[in-house]
Image (tube, rainbow, N blue to C red; front, side, top):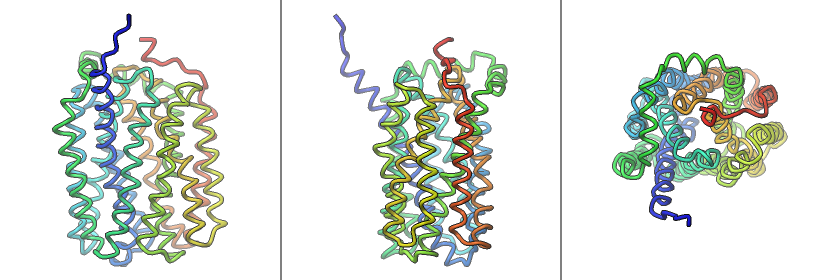
Amino acid sequence: MLRIDAGEIFRRQAAALVLALGHGATHWVLATIYVILPFLGRDLGLSFAEIGGLISLFHVASFFANAGSGALVDITGRYLTAAWLSITFGAGALFCFGFASDLIVPVAAIIVIGITHNVWHPAAISLLSRAYPATRGFALSIHTLGASMGDILAPMCAGALMLVLSWQSVAMINALAALAVAGIVAVVGPILVPVGAVARTRTAGEVSYLGALRELASNRSIILLCIMAGFRSMTQNGLMLFLPLYLVNELKAGPMLVGVAMTGIQAGALVSGPLAGSMSDKVGRKPVVLVCLAGTSIMISAMNTVSQVEPFIAVACVLGFALFAVRPVIHGWALDLAPDRMSGSVISLLFGSQSAFTMLVPLVGGLIADRWGLSTTFLLLTVTVMIAAGMALLIPSEQTSARRTA
């Protein structure tokens, strides 16, 4: 007779939830920045290109952080330490925005946030992949759900607080909330993490890591997947920057409506993320990715036909349903293609590729906006998501998981 250990089931699910909470904190920090940027730019007299340059710095820092974080996790297995430290330093950098009176503090803080924001992913996603091998897509969608909650709640809180406080004070208050989550991950995480997942992570140091890394770099499907993810990330991060700028500068929206819009674009992911992740476990990653990218392309094109705040926010909400559903599916696809011992490195490679592709979009988009208007940036983002869909078509549909064949 099959015996079900309810305590172990709760333990495993609780670990996924605490990691989702931590993931939400990293996105809470970044989402706060996106909301305050238009007002920071206005107070400091920045052009769209200069505001975009700040976000480009974020992605440059992310790129270099990804270069070593995956290897460090795979070899040492110290993912929980990396996790809570990434939240702590990221929140501390956001707190420093409260002292900004010129560009020096925002530049330094955004670099630190770029580094810490992406240190989280190889550790947490690698752990989830090991803890939930049979339902990897769904488990990663729960992790992404935490990110969506951070992206949803931070803009609303920041927008509401800016009705009565300066953006500097809002940055400091939101930073304290993220620091509290870092404490939860540091204290509760070691109690809840599945012991088996820890043991498997630490075997990475016993293998020929450089040989396995070369194997990853020569895998055609992984390279195509990274390129596809890079173009999709260009679209997502471009929207997160230029959507609030468009609302403030073109549609004359206040901070509360900016918060509502940034919350709305994420709200659909609460439903679509777990649905897409679970569906990809059953029908495969590629069909789900193609449907989501096609939907994203259609809705971005529709944005240029809307000239009023309320309909624009409504379109953004529908757009978010497709745009953010695809994230856990791409992560699951990458992990399907990589050996188990290299899960942290393949996620690092994936996120590094995304940062490399994305770093120019804020700056180039800002230059385009300065010359031809903010609405033109949406045309650029339509092109990037269409290229992503084309790259997805080139990836073979059926791939045997390297983990399963090991």
